[in-house]
Length: 55
Image 1: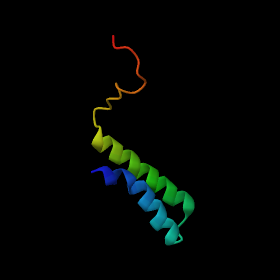
Image 2: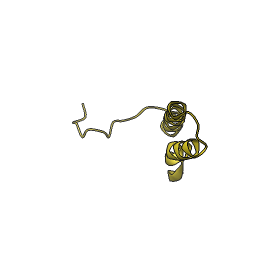
Image 3: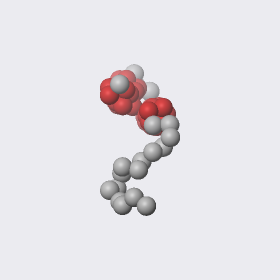
């Protein structure tokens, strides 16, 4: 589901096209994108980020 990562962009484009409140559109897009990230990585594992040594 690689395209699901782009749902926030779709929400912003549709919200602006419908001339909705920009702040509301951006906040909703941010929340939906964050929820999608939690669903994709529920354990919050970011061990591969940063390239630090494992202890």
